Length: 230
Image (cartoon, rainbow, N blue to C red; front, side, top):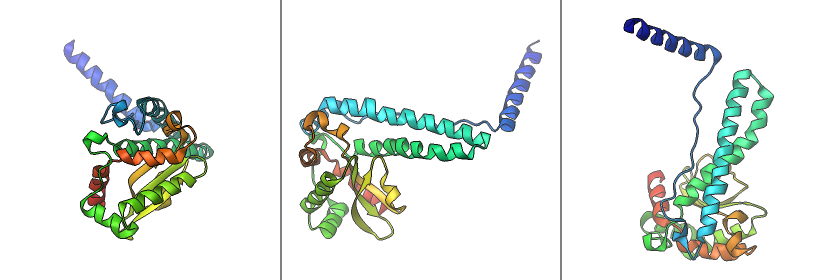
């Protein structure tokens, strides 16, 4: 009886595997909300704990949830051969996937002051910033100005162009990742200038937020990424 039971289970498992292959079914990669490496209130007074909690638990979580839903719908559309459905889903995938990618970088770009937040970059990245922008102050001024001038919602970035071997400052609209501006661009520092990143504390005064966020920028993380990709 036991031998027959084991054989039956193996047969059922084989049938399920075969059926899955015939039906084109496969497991879908899903994404999860990353934990923050610090408490929500750890970036105060530059960014309030209330903003950080809502930003992380509500906004970032929404991007993750909607990204997973769009990927599931994409898988179904591909299996059905629904070309128009596949095309229709691209905007949702770009927006929500970009939101997940950008915010995952953003949390790492920040650090409490007691853990080095705001400390100027040293070594290779510090030298590169001085070479391309004159000084750290020059870079901060440029990024803050471009972030403040960005119409609507989006991001301002310090990136490394791996092909040209140079640092660049650029902006992206909505939740577009920096890579949408060029496949050779690697994000080093990304500042979120959506209103949900600052409105509860700074109201509609985006320049004030951009003035203070540099006090908690994690240049150590940016330096590590630069060193790996240089």
